[in-house]
Structures are given as structure tokens and as C-alpha cells.
Length: 414
Image (cartoon, rainbow, N blue to C red; front, top):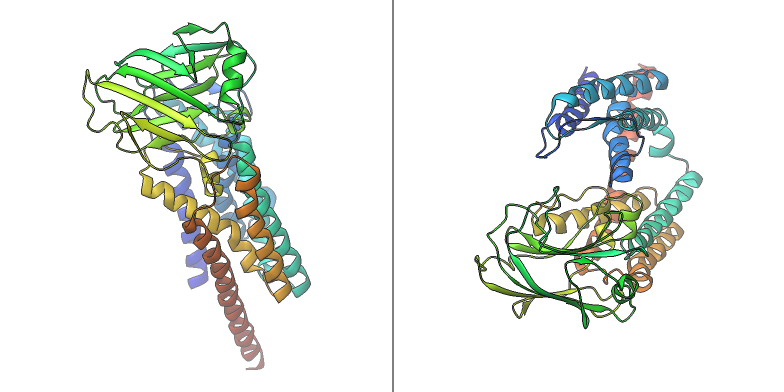
């Protein structure tokens, strides 16, 4: 009875998570539309991955209710179709065929994982070693992939300088730019005749220095561009602007090129004491690849800012409203989650040495070979805790399995 109640509760929670994530209205200036594309929008690849992950628990819950894999896939697709139809009447939501396909794929994946759970939850020693080493290799590969995706990717095209532009999808900042330079090159408001030179300056191995002199406008409730560079295809190259009390800097990365989400670099509370009409002198300096960015506002700056191996979560979903402490927590959870599977399947000393060596290679090697900042201490601690948590989960699972086996044997004898 308890097992049946647990399965039903799991199914209810999975369904609640789907409805909460998909039916909540979003603030947007656009009306709902039906899209016939599979991978839609600037963050289409990230949306596909999130849609798959969202329906994995639902498919697993259905499989635990003794539904076949094909039925789980069908129920997932039907639920997704109902949700997509309802989103036509929900502000800020779009419906697409791609969402139905990715949701159905997620439900199928969840059903397969649930049906094969005895194999990968309680594997043989030989299989456990293989799984542990594959998990460690995958974690290291994701560390390097994070660095590759968060590297700058400035297209070779005609660039346009933009002073306090009205971009539609962002707030309009009512300040006024008086001058803008990249290194010693003046950037005016309009098309750039020397776009190739601007691209070379931004992508220089020696770094660059962006300087903007402006008059402040009223405080904004969300991100608004003070200065930006776009190309002829309306792709964002760089953007600098206030977001409430913060100052935000963004640049085009390889992640944006493959339609993942776009994290930013921000200096918290940099604009808090600046009022309308104040002179603001802003600079963003990059001393070289892998050394991060230093943002200065009227002579004040903080430590170097940039991305680390823990920034991988932001490639899937990066809400700009998250406070700094929550972004730090998510980075720690991401790194701990990467190392947890290797610890879960770890059985021998050789497994531990192999996993440890690979994780060290990811946490040290990725920042050394990509533009990531050195891995901070709290992410090192998170990686170690992830391994320990994995071994702990395995111990608890094996203990429960042994108890169930003993109880089954005793019941059979009686």
C-alpha cells in the first residue's frame, strides 16, 4: 500500500511540476503564436533540452505504474499537446510542434530509465566500474564543453553601434551616451565602416577596453541597453546597460550561436547610488583570454568577473532576476551534480583514482585551456561533496536492497 501511494505521489508531483512550468503566465510584449518549427527562437536548443528534462519524471512515474514504454510516450505527447493548446490563451507563451516532440521524447526517456532502473541502480561490479568511469569522463567533458561554449564568437559581418537603443524585448533606457570607445577606436551610433577592426579588437588575445561616457537615466525595473553593438542580422555582439541596481555586460558566445541561453556578467549594486542626470563613466576591461573581465563604474570596481565550470547550468536557463547568492548556489549544485554519478557507481580504488584524476583534469584543465576563470574553492568543495553524496546514496540503496532480499527470503520460508 505504501509503495502504491509513493508511486501515485511521484506521478502527482511530476504532473504538478509540468503544469507549474508551462502554464504560468510570462511578462511579454508579444501575443501567443503557433510555431511550426522544431527548434524555435534564439534559445531553441536550450528549450528543447529543458522540455525533454521536464517530462522525464512524468514518463518514469507512468512506467512505475506498469505502463508500457509506448503508452508512456503517447501519454506524454498527449499531455504536451493539451498544454500547447492551453498556452494559446496564456500571456507570454508560444506553442510549437517542437515542444510536443521534445516533451514526448522526455516521457519516453523517463520510461526507459524507470524500466531499466535495476540494471543501472544495482549493477554488477564490472558494469559499475564502466559506469563510474563513463560518468567521470562525461563530467570532465562537460567542464571543457562549458568553456568552449562560453568563449566569444564574434561573426564577421557589418556591425552597428547603438546608443540607448529601443530593442523591443528589453527596457528602454532614458540615459544619453556622450562618447564610446573600444581601445582608442571611437564607436558612433550607426553602421561601422571598420567592422572588421572592431571584431579583431574584441577578439584579441591581448584583451580589449570598452569605455562609455554617459548621462544617467531613471532606474529601470529590468535590463535596458545603454550601449550595444549588433550586426546586420540583428545578432547581439556586445551589450552594456543597467538592470535595476546592477550593471550588466554581455557578449556573443558560441552558446548563443548554437541557440543556448546567454548568461551575463554583472557588477551588483553598481548603479544603486546613481540618479537621473548623473555623469557615469563606465569601462569593461579584458586583460586577456581566460582572465575574466573587470567592470568599473565612476572609478569603482570589484573583483574580476567571468564564467567558471559551474556556469554550465546558465546555458540551459538563465533568469536575470536571480540574486547572486542563488547563482552561486546553482553553480555549486551543478558541479556537485556532475561528480555525483561517478561516486555513485564507484566500487574499487581504481575507480576512485580514475574518477579523481578526470575530475581534476576538468576543474583545472578547462580553465587552463578555455576562457573560463580558475575554478573557485566552493566549486572544488561541491565536486568533493558530490562524490561523497554519490557513494552515500549507493550505500543506502544497497542496504535497502539487502533488507528487501532478506525479507523476501524469510517470507518465502514462512
